[in-house]
Image (cartoon, rainbow, N blue to C red):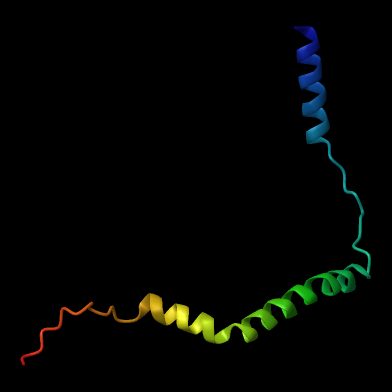
Amino acid sequence: MNLKILLSLMVLINLTSITDAYAYIDPNTGGFFFQTVAPFVYGLLGVIVVFWKRIVGFVKGLFGQKKDAGNSTKDT
C-alpha cells in the first residue's frame, strides 16, 4: 500500500513540475513536409482529372431524377 502511495506521489510531482523544453522545429521540416504531402495532393488531383466524367455521372445519378420503369401516366 505504501508503494502505491509513493508511486502516485512521484507521478503527481513529476506532472506538476514540468519545465520548458526549449525545443525548436528544424528549418528543413517545412521542406520535408512539402515534399511528402505535395505528391499525394498532385496524385489526387490527377485521379480527379482522369475520372472527372465518372465522378460527375455518379453525382448526377445520386441527385438526378429517378426514372419510372414503364409506369408512364401519359394519355394515349
